[in-house]
Length: 214
Image 1 (cartoon, one colour):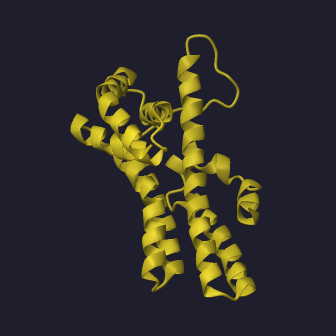
Image 2: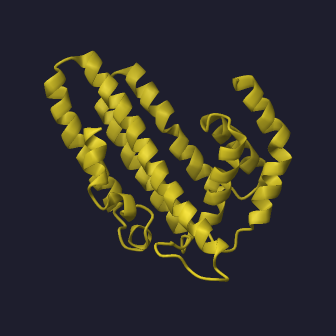
């Protein structure tokens, strides 16, 4: 809670996935800033707890918090782009944002952000194999989203969607909107009909996953 309060008080929520993030901050400045905030707090937490087991719990929940924050910023950007497209023939609402100008550059930024965040928590885990496994598994959703956005063929896209569906709690509506919004985010040229058709074809498989998880 204290770490995220500090993060929310900065410009990071709006800096992530902005035009400057894509075009100017080639050193992934925002993710480096995010990691530095977490590092300062976790260093103090480690000295205050003075207990390895409790500190490891703190590292795990911090990794989950960073993962959720990053996805939330991405979803916020995607939602704004979707609203902009929906109203493009009438008017632009205040605060609406545009899709990424370059799919290749945006994917490279995302991949580098993930690498910075992952390396940070793996270093915090040090030689604890169990802690590394938990952190890697929790943050794997970020790599999955990046690979899904980069997929150019139907087969790989479908497999990514199925795995993402498991991570959304197997909620069909959440998965459809989540994948659809992110798909439209990447470039003006991507067809929304294509992702809708793909989701429709996957409906039986996704429903099966939902039933099994229930």
